[in-house]
Length: 214
Length: 214
DNA sequence: TTAAATATGTACCAATTGGTATTTAAAAGA
DNA sequence: TCTTTTAAATACCAATTGGTACATATTTAA
Image (cartoon, rainbow over all chains, first blue to last red; front, side, top):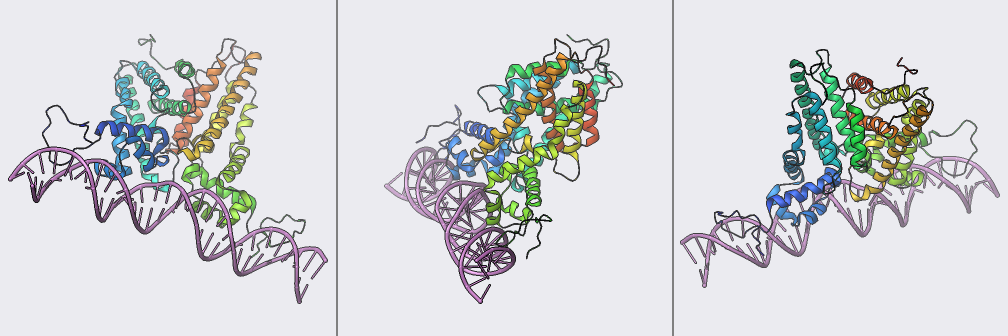
């Protein structure tokens, strides 16, 4: 049963039986599963069903559960979570935050993907065996918060944020909202309700006189 | 080995071997464990060690894992989480929110208990077997948000909040911050950093002219 | 002293966990 | 055709999961 899923057009012919699965599609299915149930809540049995691969094939192609999750994480960051980089590129701190939170709500409440953020919820409370992943996700979150802080530092230097701004606290404010939004989304909050909520959160965003809200 | 842990001073003498454990202390240990590792991440083996009881004794005293967690939840709500009711009793919406978030930070970052909120993180992402607990905790969170909304409705009627206030969105704002704080706390955020963050979140809390910030 | 009642402790259960050894199938090259 | 190479599929592994049966210990009441 060779369906040649992952053969590029002019692929070099390799010897041996060709894989019956598509690498990227399988990883996508794994992401969907981990995203839904978290690292600990996802069993190999669930992955086997979702990826439509048998266990030895998964281990041969992606390594063990931990290695597979790491590859899923990469895919998540460069895929669903790619909007973060775009948001940080917005011209003002206000627009950065507005775009970041708005896009987060859009992603975390959309119909065709699981609700909630995989990096927030993938291994939040878990047993000792998932402790390494817990730390890894913590580091990812810390990196995002650090990215916001650095962006706000630039905004401060540009006179976009008041010189007296506590950029550390501002970054934590935005990160906290994002993490809360993740919990809200996974608990069933609607996109509309969360967008209204964001409006409130942004009402008093600090700005200097020469940078007004649009 | 009868240490008579749970014999009240003038207890009625019951027949049979007296329990070697204290009901409340054992439940406290169970709470600590579930709080740390979540529902799914807590194994019976971990509970046995923490509660210093053997498995059949646990089952006899508290029922199965699910029943035990339910009793732990009750204890959590009436114990560590009791500040919620106090906060809702504050005289103005602003003070309600300030007290609620400040106390939440205090609880979720204190040294002698696990970090993060058990109701937020106890079963956020989990496998199908914990789905019931996931729903149950979602309901708890929804109840809190509803409590905030009702409190804000009263504030609105009292002229404490502007008549045009979107109390639904305000309640979701506060609930989202609380949930985000839980994630932050479990990720190692300091009490001080979170208190600074709360200040920012409260800067533009809506108020009418006859109710000013203290 | 003995029976009834209740708790503890050991040993066990089937099912599931993550992970592999081994056999079989399908392709390319000689 | 036949060997080599690679993947799929079945069957298995020890360890752990939540949950129990059963024997033993400790108390009170008769």
